[in-house]
Image (cartoon, rainbow, N blue to C red; front, side, top):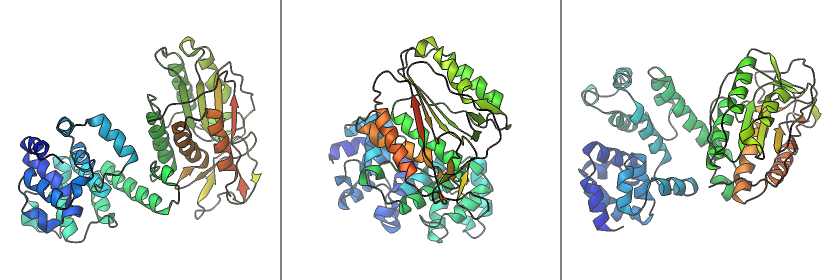
Length: 411
């Protein structure tokens, strides 16, 4: 690393930012070594001595994490380049510490006051003027906090900020999922985050993969049947002339030919799709719909069983009686159903929808390799259908009227 570049960075870092950098480097340099570090220049010297800056992404990631995007230009890079590099390469900066730093950025003065009040076993003299990062450091010293010891922090945050506590839970679940997965190196780079409830995890995964494909992602949650139709009307009436494609992902319960709103009222899938056939700014453009919902009450024979007790890990989407209606569409539509008609679709109570998980994984892998969408969905069909789901099976079903081969871009 060019010392002149480091000097220019050092000149513009504030005291609080240096403290943040020290916290992020704690696992690499150690608490004792960092006690004597008073400025960024000294910190950079320590990083050089430990050969940490031989990883060219390490320092850019540090600056990116604390939000000093303007200083990245002094290292010959920028925010976009660092962001893209971090998607495929681990810089060496601790994800655990980055998570904690992210919390510190969103802790309000009231949150911090409440947290200090709840930490009765920490030295009061130190807590009086302590920042949130100081509090975290003290908790680590007292062995109340660590990468594998986040329960105490989560418990305290739950009493002052549910949102911050949820982010700790999200990190814990992600770490647990990554430790359990046995995937190829290529898939490992796209580690799907896991969240406490399956619907949130599915949405998070979908948002992540479609953002990578340069889609403008919008989310609507907990809609009634009329709310679903209102959203359909809203999107079908928009001007999509500057867009190349439209995608709608709908995660709900369902019955043959329908999905349900949170009020339990059915909405015909054909009614969801038909308005887009009349959208003039989408004519000649691909319109994709991915629907996670049961399409009947029957079970496909296999090795999963119906989730009927509190101890079961998998469940089928809840169903109600509803009439069947076919799905008439015009040209350039694709409807990816989680299951064929008349059968149930399964969700893991922790990992979420089997169909959505496999869809996200194969979209990421296939789009990066420039595969067309039908080839990708064929892989999804196979990945889902070979799984043993509580003594039963699930067979997704794509239906399409695409008139051209569709290849979606992905960074």
